[in-house]
Structure formats: C-alpha cells, structure tokens
Image (tube, rainbow, N blue to C red; front, side, top):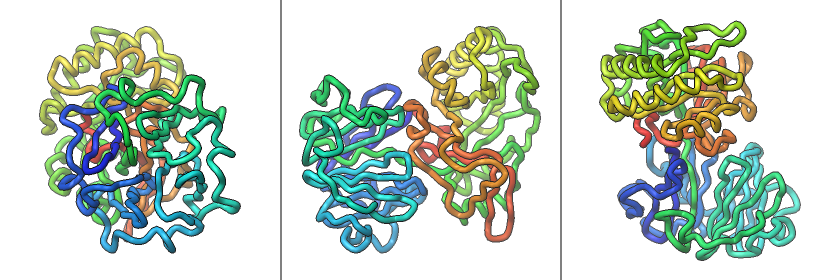
Length: 420
C-alpha cells in the first residue's frame, strides 16, 4: 500500500509496492495534479527527507512542499549556483541513498551530494563506469532506492537491480521493464520518487490549542489517534477530537492497542488467539465508528512485541486482519521492523507501519522544532512499509511550548487512514 510516483512526458503513474503494480486509472496527466510543476518534461525527482521534494526539468528545478501540495514560492530556480559543486547542465536521474548522501547522474558521470552539508563531496564528478559495477554506463533515465538493500535503475526499455551491500548490479540484469512492472510505462521511466509526510504519535492528547499550533508552525501533516478503551490501552482522550482535527487539516492514523504477546514485563492484555482476534476486530470497528471514521478507513493494530512471533499471536493477527476487512474497514499493523516481514508473510493485506529507530536520533535527548524528518518510508529497511516511526520519546518545541514525549513518523501519503 506504499506509493511511488513515476513520470513520463506529460503523464505520471502511481505504483503500489505491495501489489507490485501501477494503481488502477493511471497514468494520468501531470497538469492539474501537481500544482506548480510543469505539465511535461520532468527529468528527475528526489525526496529530501524534510518535507520537501525536488523536481528537475532541464536546467531548472522546483521545490515541492509535500504538506502544502504545491511548489514553493520563488521557484523554479536555476540548478547552476544553487547546488554547490553540482556542475551539470541538467539531471538525468537522482536517488537518496538513505545514508545522508544523494547521487546525481548526468551523461556518463555522477556526483555524490552531502545532504546535511548541502554541497557536493570533494573529487566529484566521477565516471559511472568506474564506480557502479555492471550499471548502465551513461544516460540513466531514473533511479529509486527500494529500502531493502536494493536500488533500481532505468534506461530506455530496461532496468537493473543494484545490490547496495555488494555494490554491484545483480546477475541476470538488465531486464525489460515490460512484463516486470505491471502497468508502468514500458520505456522512458523518469523521476521515480516516494513522498514523505511528517507525522506524530502521542498516547496523551496534547490539547486543541497545541494541535492547532503544531499544524500552523510545523511540517506535521498527520497524527496517531488512539481508539479506546482497547484491551491494552484505556485512555479515551482522543476519541472526541476527530472532527476538530480534520477541520484543521490533520490526517489521522487510528490506532487500536489490542492483545499483546506475553513477554517478560510486557504490559497490557495477553489473550492471543484466533477467536479473540475476531472479537477485537469487531471492537476496533465499533470504536472507529464511534469516533467518526467512515467505513473503508485504515485501522492500525498496535503490536508492541519485540520477540519472535508466537503461534497465538500469528493466529490473533490473521483473524484480526480478516475481521477488519469483513467489517468494511482496511487493516493496518504497527510493529517492529524486525518482525514486519514475518507479519507480511502471514497476511500481506494490511498497511504496514514499522518502527526502526536506528537511523535517526531518538530518546529524551532528541529535540525537534518546526521541521520534522519525513523521509521515504521504504528507507526504514522494510520495502512494504507505508509508514515509518523513526523517533520515540522525543521533544518537540514550538514557538511557545515544549511538548513531550512525542514519537515522530513519516508516511507515503498525507492521511494514513486513507491508504489504499
């Protein structure tokens, strides 16, 4: 259910990673759907991980505000003079490598850009053929980091899969795009990109005034919303605030803290069984309807376990997922990145919200202000992650308040309840 965007001429396509296919109804025109972008000629795109996505067209570029859903004022601008050390006339392809570096390709050369320092690393450009084993040596059309240790590169009607750890194209590539990327353009794939929308998660409701201020002053787009009373969470503080939050503009992620796997010192209720999964699915739906959610919304089952999945939890998860679907809602699951692929193998239908804190500062010393990180969720290391929790128990400072504890997240869409 995580979404990628691909461009070609005057059109773009939205690709669903879980389904491994373009969404129904695509491609559609760029014009009218990406406010401020040109109607054709998008060469490359890159999510900068801070709520902004850069689009390149010829010798100019656009900075797109993911939250506002429009190009920022003052754009387009010339590439020359605004990207230190990026000595190229246009960008063929670019990709965020997920380690603080971005790569830009033009002709037979590439540049490595330091995102934090905002400048090209010394000694670049370098020949593609000298450093990228087995990759197309020139004129790459598009590139995307898949987040699972693989990256894909497109040229003409072909694509290659690059193993990041081995630092080489895998044996058997390139292959034809046609037949491998269902519903995607068969050639000329440009500017593959996944957007990132910053979100927050707090068990206690911060209050109406704080939520209004966070919307006004930050790039936060959505918030977790606790359905209660649930088996392992009793506070009902969020339950009456949906209309208020949506009236401001917030997206929401309804969270149901269900049964938890019994582990040492684990809190909550521990009745993990298939029949209980069916009962809790019905309870989650009842709470969602009571809070004001419409059928078809995603409800996220909160699974806090860190240990191996026991048979009881597997049965509970599968029956909860089916029960939510039977009841007319869409299932989601919040879980550790260490377990996400196992849950996906049990049932791939939920939207996956995975927590992986290894790539960003987290804990009581992490302090965020107006700009929350919002990288592509696939960079969480789970390719099927539509939502990524990247910081826990952090501090958020507004112009007048300090709010703690806060968890921070990124989603591939602006409203996690509407992933589909």
